[in-house]
Image 1 (cartoon, helix red, strand yellow):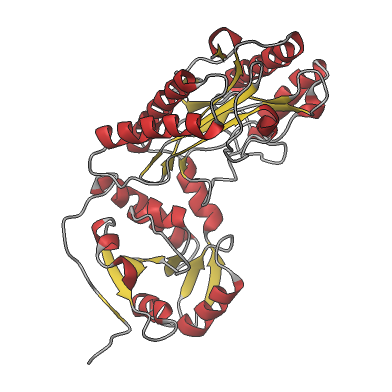
Image 2: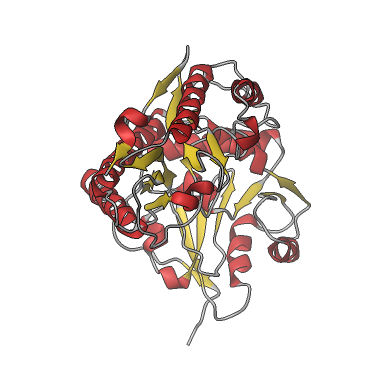
Length: 400
């Protein structure tokens, strides 16, 4: 029996999140970057870049995946366990590698790149073991980190991307309303979270009948569990007067959107109300700052000043916002477009960014808990467009 190192297994109809022209434009932009950097072939290994340039979002499960791009080809490299599914979900060619011999993955990549080339790779993703294998099997003349350049390309969203992000924001709102309806004293966090998740997944399936459905989730936190932005859901039961954190995250073909809101169960005390209103004020002020020409650091310092004037800056938890697009809680993000003091990226039309100030007050202090509001903004020629619809603030969000 002939057991090949790799082969092509193509069957079924192709289905992608965007039209071929969208991927053609992305790949053309990439090849321009490659030419400027004298890179002959790129070997992408991250979920976000493979999905961005090919449409295929892999499920690693301990196996490596790749997208190889040179001047004339773009080829996804996938494991045999996935059969033809990667080909159905990508543009360009697809090669399946087998596990009948160790490192067939690299042999498949070599079949596209050939030896001795200038190779672009993602230094922020490829681990030391795989980098050593790249050097062994591809014998590159040199390697160059292309991750910063691709991140910069991904920061600027096409009209098709913005349309998908807009749909995601609308679906996040649907999840938010479902969560609000489920909030009652004595209900568990997990029960409320499931209501929001189910509502979003049903809406995604309705709007995107040809998509893959995975990874949509909710973080719904109460009481002390609100102190961190990414605290997992528990079975804690809601109590009257609890501070709540609503976080809905629909995932559509690798594209992440979010809605995050502070709420209270039935009633809110005066100390909590004062902090909540201050955070809402920072949120609104921050939104007003998001416009072309403003740097991420400049926006951050201005919001810092807002909190410092109210003696609240010491309760700030993290940066004030981040980019949107192909990202998730377990794979890539565009770290160059975050609202932090150490990021000097200047906002430009076509970027999509959140505004999400958060204050955390420790247990035992008046107003204890985590307060966070989160909207998604598309940067326009003269300002921004807020594509989040679910209301924020005490008037709407004291519920149950």
